Image (spheres, one colour):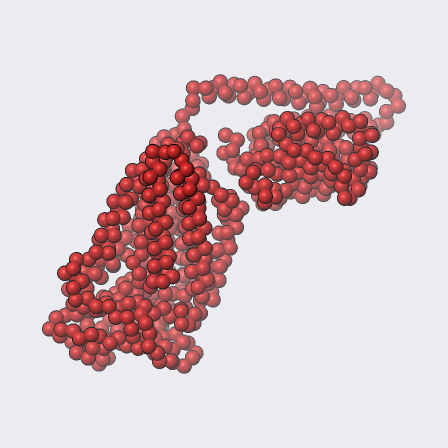
Length: 605
């Protein structure tokens, strides 16, 4: 699998080169309007405002633009009347205002009350004009009076308010407006279409190949499609704030799924990519996102977004470190690609959301999305067109595996079932053996045979499944002996996979420990527990403990002569497990087994 990933990375150098070229072209188109177009354009940074939160009295104050309603009255809806004082303009030339962000619903009028523009119905939360930039042509009266009034109705946590206002000749402002309008509208629609195609193709690859990378990419693409469509949707299908929570949740899910695919491709998997942590964090962030819009507190949502960026950014730094340490001819291309994505996302977070004007700022995250789409599209095409080919030694390896499995089954039947049958025959020869002892020996024969059969099941390579099966096999016998067993197994955890031979030896160790408890300890209770301590997660270790309240370690050694415990140690040593046997604080014996496992179904391939 690592060889396949190295092959996948070989063409990433070309993706990095294309991404750099694309970035330069887009930035030149976006940021560098011609001097002729920007010659007479001025920016207004101040306004006189009358703010009236719902249920409160109005307050008059001077504002610096950009103005965010949520920064002044968080969690409240209301209205604001902004008076803009225009510079001296040439009355013989048509002039206009360019508004990168204005909303949520509004009316623009001149000094005489003539309506110059209107977006949505005032106070009607079913529309949102802040999604798109606006161009307003000034009337002759507005130019002469040098004053324009913008009246807005605003909903909480909806980016309501007014960004910086650009005023100048209409001909010049049209070019600036169209440049940003096309980028936001057609760029968002193009990205949404590409994300949708990518997710359809990814889910198709998953359907045929069951590639976990493809299903993550498919979900990430679907949520990204919704997020980019919402950027241009002035009339959403759901009322506010439900629509805000849905879209923001889609952004979080899009970022998380794409992040997990990215770090998987570049072998930077951490604890956070494991299902338990990944989906746990996802649920917490979705709940916080819903809470932010329920309370109307956009600061909570910005905090969630910032945390998402920090998590993904830390993984990107780890990827950069790994790439830098590799001796690869594509190292520089990979480094450039990662630095480029980090720079674009950081720009949007810092210059856009924290210190900028939010949706009114120049947003470069779509460029990062476009680069990531290109990388993943190449990856899927490469994987789909280059299925893993069997090597020349595959047939030999399969035959060797079958032969080893036959030998293991023969050894298990000889040592387990065969040994117990010999013991049963010797007991039948002696007339003084009780009926109860004969039944116990027969139960041991049956348990050995069932365990051998269980080990042949292809689905029984998961440690938790095996212990659950062992519980099913041994519980009736222990209950009949008056021993109450308390099993403590994790309810929700990833598969802890082990080779079949290791699984069988773990079964035998646990069974031997429980047999000691039943026959020799005189215990009334036994506790069986499986846990994966947090300190052992990265090492792939799990701990099984068997503890009883019987007569203790010394009595067991005296009765068994130590043979059972020696067999347990030999089995543990043969699979590289660590076995410790000691006294329990409950008064009986404590058996502790530390075994190695592999995460996920691919681990046994």
